[in-house]
Image (cartoon, rainbow, N blue to C red):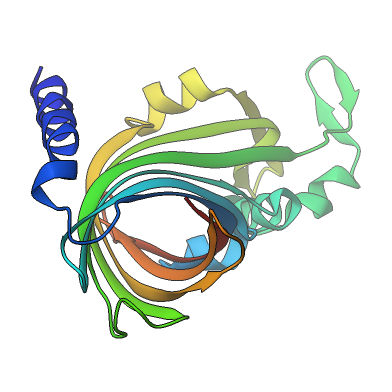
Length: 241
């Protein structure tokens, strides 16, 4: 209910903005690009460069200050083979590739396991912020800074097959298991988070036609996830209407 009231308030503000902020034309922006993991160390070590997309509406209380209302999306995937080896080493003292090469004796016979894991994370951002311009409104190329506060809806997906999780070197008994997302949540903890985050950055706006401009933007994002905070840099390009 609080979120519904928040978005209703934002809609009212936007509808009333054209008359109140008539000194500079309001604009709509769509842009996409890459997201580069920064922290914590495990996130940076095992996560591939992600995808970033944004839609933004900007209103102008003055010619050199914009107020941004945005919705964004990021998607990250993990180097699964590298992560599986590291996790197996942490749990059993040997990488997953070691166990995959062995014939294991069990009460029901000899088996060979194939350890693997699949992890991904996606987030949707709702937020607003301030965009001060460092150049005059009549300048051909506009340079701006950006500061945002965001509410992030994070969804993590995790699954594993034949993941080694316990090894007793005295008896040479290895245990392994298959997890899906529901099992992971029940055994480890809550898998999804809704958290606050912040973004700081800047960019350029360059004329590209009579009815639109091109915007280049870099934004450092930090999210207050459980344990260590998560951070990444989004580098995007898009169109301004």
